[in-house]
Structures are given as structure tokens and as C-alpha cells.
Image 1: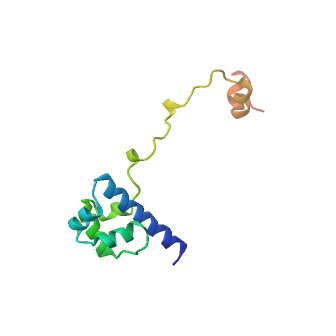
Image 2: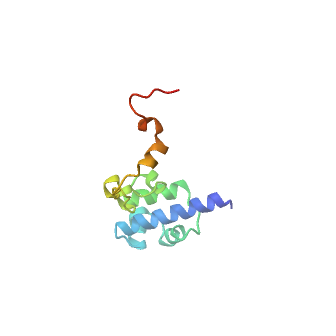
Image 3: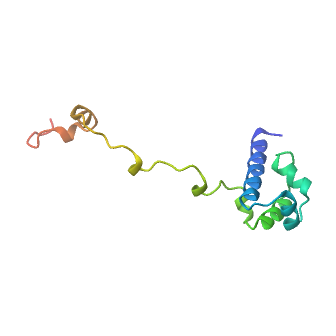
Length: 115
């Protein structure tokens, strides 16, 4: 199997497991809700089975999610928070030389003209 396909199967395996755990469903409960056998769900979650589109649709229905959500990363709220500009420290002093290097035209005297 190609490495890309293997990685994709692993991604689906993790997503199914994450969605099942988020809903507090056991393998047996998801099997009952989806019509997919407990052993097949276990194989999928371990990345040891390549599920068909029909099986993935049944799992999505059993999890109460759209099929596409099995292929998407979790929402941003579930991921680690990112720093925002408000979270970043402000510099305590500004180095005028650094500003001149970055924007020399701003440091010129207003009466000087470009040559």
C-alpha cells in the first residue's frame, strides 16, 4: 500500500475513534447504532482495515455526523489554542536603528528629498 494511503487510513482511524470517544460510545454501542460489526469498527480504529464508502457512511450515520467529518480535522475549538496578538508581549523599548534599517524612508527628515 502506498504511504499516502496508509497515512489516510490512519487519519480516518483516529477520527472515528475521536468521534466515538467524544460521544462516550463503546464499540458495541456504535456497532448497534451503525449496523457495522464491533470487530470491523475495532479494525478500522486500529488502521488495520480499509473501509468501504458504504461502511464509512454507516459509521457517520451511527455517530450522527456528516460523512465528510470523517475526513476533516477536528474543529479549531478542539485543537490546542493559538496565541493571538493580544497574548503576545509588547516590546518595552524600540530600537530606532532597527526601524531605520526596516523603513529608511520613514526616518528621513521631512524636508529632505530623495536623490
